[in-house]
Image (cartoon, rainbow, N blue to C red; front, side, top):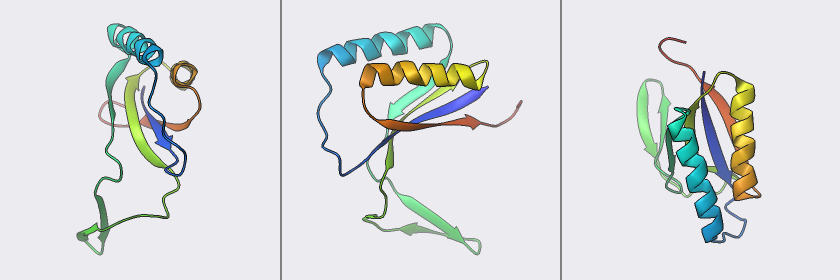
Length: 113
């Protein structure tokens, strides 16, 4: 089973840089998941991005700023586990390293599922 774990951020919350200890712990966690074959991809996302809307078969780029967005996805990890419970446990380990925050876990469906 594949899952997308997404980290969301509240743009109104103060942003503080992570400390070196957190970076070291996160690096070890990522290395452990990579060695185990659980982590398929991970990364941070640019703030805002480009929004596209499709209506009536026509796609258009939507200009911002988008003040109505209370939470934005700022990072992700694509993982492969045996169950949703395993994905939740990995997410709990992630949050125990980074501290306060919020995120979403969604199962990814595709060929072979």
